[in-house]
Length: 526
Image 1: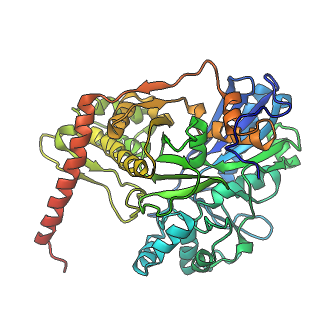
Image 2: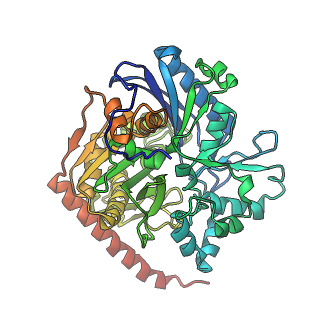
Image 3: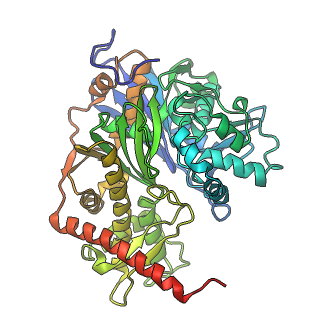
């Protein structure tokens, strides 16, 4: 297997101006296709969004056909701009923990169950009560949580056996996208490691996990190296405008590739991403011997791993505030309460900026979707703590943002215990906001360099693609080839007032929760 972290050394045939490589980043609510010129500058970026559906409480799914159509459309629009003759290859990044069942003829039997799907919380509770959860975390590096395909499969086997009877293969999001582009349903080592079913030590499916999931290994996609390439199918070529046979590099999962894209590939470098959800991660050369229960450990390739934690509730919390507090039908609104999230995102930030740091003691636990790190407890619900009459909508909005930043800071402190952090690089559309940037930096308590949206997982995918195509000897060289000489990071330094407020909020959260626990004595269980 190609060593992604190989040292410098120019690969044969690599030269400036030889074309572009498409980095395809398939995320939770949209796909981004970035055409990276091998002479440095990013040539073009296309984005196509799709909805995250909630057909029933706790269900967070997507229509696979809509998602695949968005991927093909975004690639086609990008190719139309850069020209198909310029494209040397395609490399993929996909969101982790997705699961979709397909029939023998390839037809999709189930929707795509995303990482945000919380229906399997009961299975998680049972595995924890039986003591199995800790062993699964130790073996697979994936916390036992409703996000995990392992527990999704166990839940489906119990509750939807009739509806999934036609399923012959269970695919992750990577295998779904690869099949759409190449006609072959395979996944990569990195994506497979987030399934909760891959043994970190062997790189094979864990017998214990398969037994709990109720599947055999032949019903899961074959696992190949992230650098493996397959030819683009004729059907996908017709849909995208690319030439049939164009190499499609499998790439890796979006979490590890977030580190690659920002250049945070050393054990001292922390990568932070904040979009719909958020994550804090660090690349290490081997899994920690005693993995912190608050953290995950996923493969980047056979010789490198990513430890960290993810929050389900990132920028989506601001979207919720906008819809609930500032949408049509809210106080001051005039409609049915649905609101217009494309407008209210900016309005939330403007409103939150008018409240003082620390929100006058108001704290929000932003657990709107089943939360992940650091507690990995999907049953936790969101709450405002310390609410008083003096608090306004502005306080509510700011406390929501501060609550998200606090969660990221808590994870960063746990990763710092694995290996001391020297620098932080961040990416994500949410961080275009100065307020978000300053709140997150304050929660970390250290400087943070923010890089552009194209410098995230799409760039990470492209870097792996260059290694897979033999155009770079390792990630260091690939990142040098893809670096835009005109691009620059935006250094953000912690503001003392905001740092003090962040420290006070973390302390006050503990005090408020302790007081709430005492107050439970007033309401004995029936």
